[in-house]
Image 1 (cartoon, rainbow, N blue to C red):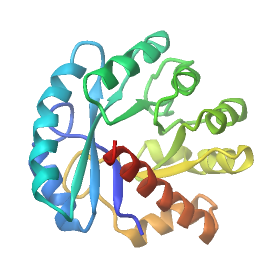
Image 2 (image 1 turned 120 degrees about the vertical axis):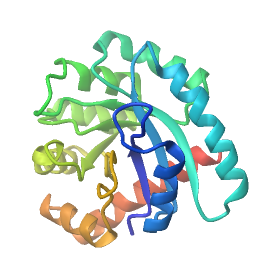
Image 3 (image 1 turned 180 degrees about the horizontal axis):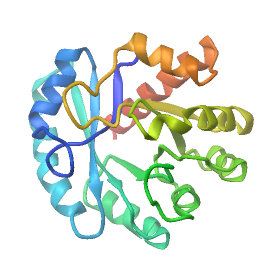
Length: 220
C-alpha cells in the first residue's frame, strides 16, 4: 500500500498549506507518514529546517500512528553546489534530501541529475529523460528515482520506470504534494505504476522502498 509520501510542500515554498495542516490532511487521508521537503537553495534551507523541525518534535512525540520527516528539495541550484548543500542540510537537521531533477517541463540545468546522484542524495525527484548511465550510477550510489503523481512532471514516468528496471535503480512513488487534492489513494498509485509498465511485484517493491526510507530515517 501507498502509506508514506516522501515529497510534500508547504507555505515554506510553493505549497498552499501550513505544515501542520499538510500533516493533518495526510493523516486523515490514511497515510502513516510524510516528509516535508520544501523547495530550497542556499538562501533558505536553514530557515525551512529550523521551523519545520519544531513541528516534527511536536507531532512525533505525541502521535503513535502518524509521523513526519523533515527535509528539503534543492531546486534549480547549480549542479556543483549540490554536494555541499546536501552536507549542510544534514548538519542542520534534515532527515531526507531530495534534488529537483531534470523534468522536461522546467528549465533545470543539464547535469543536475548526475550531480545529485554523485552527491548521494536520498531521492532524485522527477528525473525526466534520465540516461542509462546516470540510472546505473543511481543504483550503485543507492539514490532512489522518483515516479511522480504530479501533472507535468509525470510525463516521463514511463521512461524513468523503464530505465530504472533496466539498470537496477530503485524506485519510489511520491505525490509532490502542494495543495489539497494532490494526494492519491493506494489504488490510484497502483494504477500509475502499472501505467509505467511495472508488474505487481515491482509495484510492491516500490511501495516497500517508500516505507523503508521513511522508517530508516525516522529511527536515526
